[in-house]
Length: 370
Ligand code: S3P
Image 1 (tube, protein in one colour):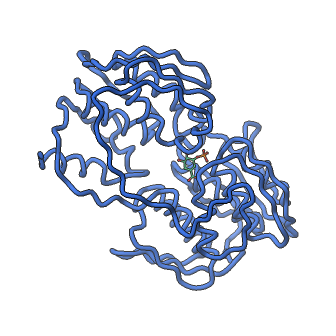
Image 2 (cartoon, protein in one colour):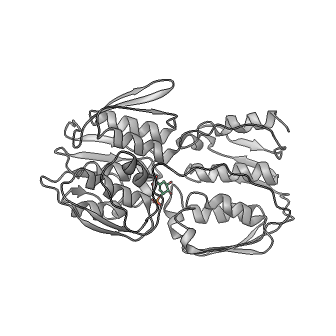
Image 3 (cartoon, protein in one colour):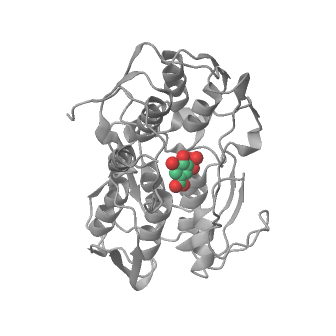
């Protein structure tokens, strides 16, 4: 067990240039796709977080050579369906839903029985969302009645393409099916509710033939921009339109903090998916806001946040038993540093799954006042 962290001081304005780490979703996808290529692929600035390292470990167990160097990572793929697997191989996806779900898409042809396991948090998460469509390709699965890990997969002898309708706005579901389609002769068609598009961007970049019918925007690479943010004296509350949900799904906890300082009541609806993350994130996010003295009205799929621009935190706040959800940890740390109060944050090692340099960066900012 790692000792809790206490934060008792707000952070002062700082002057630093930040080189951001590689993105988790892209790093995992790069590794999975590189494993399907013939020969060596190289990635610079690959995120070295536990979720990405779990991905590399799983690929090694599937017979893929991985060379993790100081500045880059190389993966030597064996081509499509080129995994070399011993029967009863166990793959540990650790904390990563993206890895656990996407890798199943690459195993729809596996000739051997492969078991996927995960940590306590991942073992509570739903896998029916990928098992159901992947079964249509012909893959066989063994799972318990609630579709949770551990799950066994046996590939299909003759996988067939499918028609799939993705209704949750989940990039993971869409991507698992895209990876299965990559390994399956014939045309798979996916009608998907809008969600993050890292896989489409990488497929396009690799010239894997996909036609994007709904989303007509042309991406040759991820869209990037310089972002200038000017602080506002007054933050207004928001009635968040539903169509933004899947694009902001990982940012909601931070948006909730902004809503906590806004003038008025903010409303976020149709976000039950937040409770399906590494923790029941909607519930826990609301609980933290309450501990900060912010009133919320919570349902299974919505939250109303009664903002208070004058918010001051007087009481002690202890954040624990949050299933080591890295985003709950980040939310708490950012609240402590920006709003103040006396916080005790348990399980600071949670952050290692996605942003191992987070605490060092904060220390650096604390040392470089503007
Ligand atoms: C991710 C998709 C999102 C997101 C997760 C990463 C991905 O999950 O919450 O952190 O890499 O595809 P869903 O697709 O389940 O919404």
